[in-house]
Structures are given as C-alpha cells and as structure tokens.
Amino acid sequence: MERTADHQPITLKGQISLEFLKKRNFTGSCRGMRYNLYRQDDRLVAAVYPQPNCWECTPEEKKTYEYFELSGEGLEAAVAWLNESYKNRDWSEKGGVF
Image (cartoon, rainbow, N blue to C red; front, side, top):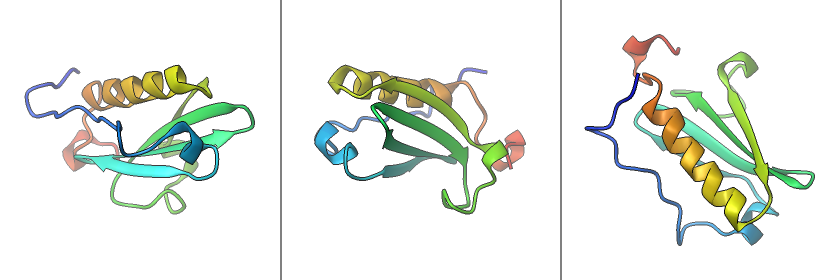
C-alpha cells in the first residue's frame, strides 16, 4: 500500500548530525508512525513502530529494524527508509498495526 497524498517527507537536515547519533538516540513521529535512530557498535540502526506508546513501552514484535553504515550516506539512506516505511504501511489505528 503506497500513500503519498497526505505525506510530507521526513527530513532531518539541520535537526541532527552524525556526531549527535554517535552519542544519543534521536526519536520522532510521522502521523501514527514513530521512529528511533541510534548507534549500535559501528552501524546506524533505524526502527519504526506504531503510536501511541514510547520506545520502551512498545513490544519488540511491533518494531521493525533496518541497519545502515554509520556515515552521512548511511544517515541519508536511513531517512529514505523511514519515508518508505511510512508510505508502504497503514499507520492509522484502523490499519491494524496496534
């Protein structure tokens, strides 16, 4: 299912840097989809999960992960993956992701 009409792409330029992600997690949301970006060893991890719960309270089976190179290009690829994840799934409560 691809949804594009109501989707403003996630853009993180100017909001976070690779240096930030080397030290801290970055979380956000986009119309029912929450996301988390963080460093794990020498790679960047991107994860998406449904609202309404926070990361810590969301069951593991509701989280989807993807792994990227810990670099500027990896961060760009992770943001592209977040946008694809949003477009390809119904994140509304009616969509059955809860």
